[in-house]
Image (cartoon, rainbow, N blue to C red; front, side, top):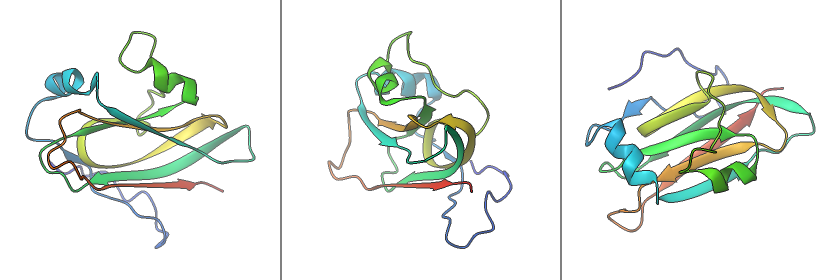
Length: 137
């Protein structure tokens, strides 16, 4: 399913991917699959106390979905999968069970970053994931 969300950026240097839901299984199954999945934290780099980012994530693996969350620090990464996990809950700051996703997240603390999580059943083992982060000026 492709979202009708408006273009996030008119800048030709900013990559924006369509919002594509994973159609292979539902979100409740995804949440079970990613509990012990592969998690990668991408820290933001800013000189400001708080900032905003456009971002996009996609994979070439059509069999799995990924979750993506802006979180306040790398410490939150360790909390993923338990009730202590906190993320930015505003619209555009997270996506669940996606195969392609773009968003805008505002008011991110300077220690924050993007957490991308895949289930631990990647087939093939080599899966290409593309992540783009663009700070608003």
